[in-house]
Image 1 (cartoon, rainbow, N blue to C red):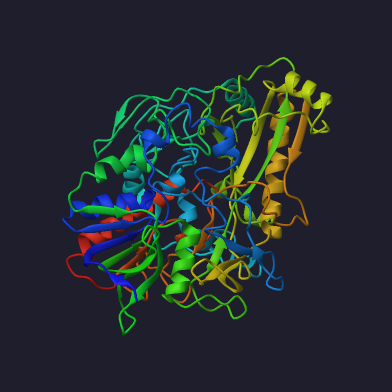
Image 2 (cartoon, rainbow, N blue to C red):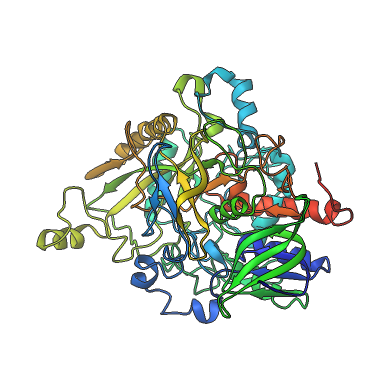
Length: 589
């Protein structure tokens, strides 16, 4: 029988970006808040100290800050007819582990969706006609607009101290910024990052072709900065250890640098690590949650934690799994198309072109996770879907994140992978390679989903979650379109060697190479409870005191990295909780 703790006003599942922000804001309302984190505690000191954290073997190759599949995994298949098998070795995506979650090891790319992405289905139908939507594609509107979200996206960017150059301030297009972005109320909090040679070369080539290059927005400080919670960030030193690593310099925005130390000083906040939530418990009528049951690794006990408000703020895949296990919302059935939990899983569609230049030294060891120059000329709002035969888009970037000796030592295609010839190529070409990459959208489909696996169970005896995912023709056409736009830019730069890598017709999803950790959907938001698990305030349609944060709310995946959107949605939801829910707990829609 589970031990029972003293009741809390709020229990938060997960202490990454969304969990830490929710905890801070609800503590400010005077509520008694407990956060439960399945992993270990993580702090800048001692966990990110130099030189230990700049260990590529430990953190880049052996995934020191990632969840281990032996403790937390899922099964994966490509089609509904296949038998899913466990994801036993991290590759395609890398969920974070411990306090801070994936906010520890991200690269800092901080984007906002375009205006049309918030209402994608309506935009497509109004502009091109519903008939262009392929059979089986399930794109939806989010239930919110860019205008409604702007102040909350802005607040998140100012929490992080994002560096960048605005391109559209209150409808005024600003030279040097992104002219295709949704209107923003003011400039970024910090000036853009200093660019490397590859970014400058790409910007020059793009301008010559009539395109609109701008510095990629970065959750990385370019100057000393203090945010609204009193947390201080220092200017980046371009060390090249962002992705897969914690920031040793207090420069890259993370829950540690932006929220947690201020949150831990709150007398009404408490958090427990090594505490995995097993289930959200419901009242006898099923209309509300009564709290959560979690497993305390330190004592080996199951514990029931009563609470009036449950915030689900784990990684997106874990949010879906927990909702399925808790039987909150009808599980999605891809055959009938009915149900909501597990619906509209999506990923990301990327590709790129590499170039080698004998006479250009790109100094790859000088970099950050977000250094780079981008163009949005081929983004969702700039493409004629009817003429091109696909729905979606991509931003395109040149820049590098570092020059680490294992994962970032590139040699020309055709070079042997070991031996004397490889050594010579590594010496000759290490500093002479640059890339132009496409980071694209991924639409939602009827037969792409998440559910409970009928065969495999976890260490607690619960069914693992099963992912059914494969690439679709629509998204292949999108990435091939990007190839047709990128290669002419690359060719105009006159490289000595050029090689492209884009998924082509017949490509199958492969879990082995890393692609992104941008898993979205499964507990999606919307305005119709028949096709969404959450209402427009990220509140469960079924249990009104359960709110679900994170990218699991995305109805389909945007063309951008999701963190900026996730942060904005968190502030949007807390605004509704504070102003409307806490004074009168009930369904908000």
